[in-house]
Image 1 (tube, rainbow, N blue to C red):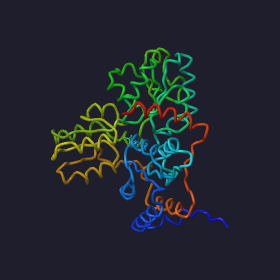
Image 2: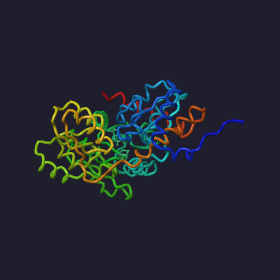
Image 3: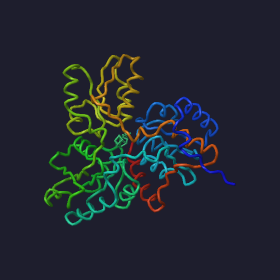
Image 4: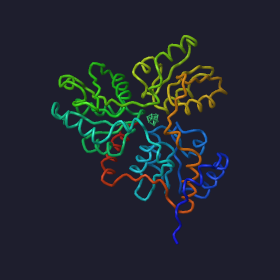
Amino acid sequence: MAKSAVAIQNYIHLNDDDCESRIAEAKRVLGSELVILGHHYQREEVFRFADYSGDSLKLSRQAAASKAKYIVFCGVHFMAEVADILSRPEQMAILPDLAAGCSMADMADLVKVERAWRELGEILDMEQVTPVTYINSAANLKAFCGRHGGIVCTSSNAQAVLKWAFARREKVLFFPDQHLGRNTAYGMGIPLEEMVVWNFNRPNGGLMPDQIRSARIILWQGHCSVHQMFQPEHIDRFLERYPDARIISHPENSFEVCQKSHYVGSTEYIIKTIQESASNTRWLVGTELNLVNRLHERFKGEGKSIHFMSPMVCMCSTMFRTDPQHLAWVLENLVSGQIVNQIKVPEKEVELARLALDRMLEVSI
Ligand code: 13P
Ligand code: SF4
């Protein structure tokens, strides 16, 4: 009789130490058939098993380059979808906990984006509008961009992607993160008056035709629930106490927070900037807590003092869903030949989503 997969219920009560040794053993047995990719926001007990860690761009490249049969993605759902799209058909992308989504990605869906495209089409020449989706979005939205001459971006390459888009067409529809769109466009010299916010719950985005006509970038009204916790007052209070401190933020933070920050960039940029800074510097970091804690541990030996921007504990709760129990579960099932939690993007979306991702990879340095 064919073996069936072992259920997660057999793992949820295991303690972390047991999981640790079982994960290590499963990794040893699977050898080069397996690669584990870990986003910087993963908790330490999982992150330590990543063969490659990185931000969304770096991990997309890693997924595209991997030869392993199984790509286990310790991250969130859209990342595993990207791994499936960019890998070869015989490879499998696996997400240890299927509930690890992204609340920002959920703020845009195909029905709403198609409606926006139709409504905009009654006012604008859509041959002059490029759809740009943040990688934090569903595969069918990446396919939408592929179909309409658009492109994907990450927080590492948003400026290069917008340059690409504006070199081709007059306007951009940017979704789902208004903050990444606004912060990036502003940094390129586009004034705030030439940006509008599209409220996806209202007809015509809640905008008048003239506002739409005079905008260069139409920003979807989405945001990250984690990064919205960081406030300009947190920076002011910290600088009153430590006037020499350096402030560094992720571009998913609000415009006001990014304007008050000395440095703004992706998770990979944040790590590199702090790593290359002089010893004995003090940093206030506006991004997810697990990464900031890791930076604190890593650099305290160099006398660098790393502080979290919010007085509240704000973690990405969906990134946090991937625990050692789920990782042990998917790996031991692989050892016994069972695939659980495979992420498979529908065939009809793969080609167009890949087109939009390939355009992005081409313009990224
Ligand atoms: P990066 O990893 O691209 O910096 O993005 C952060 C993030 O929100 C991941 O979802
Ligand atoms: Fe999504 Fe924000 Fe979590 Fe990133 S940090 S995965 S944008 S909810």
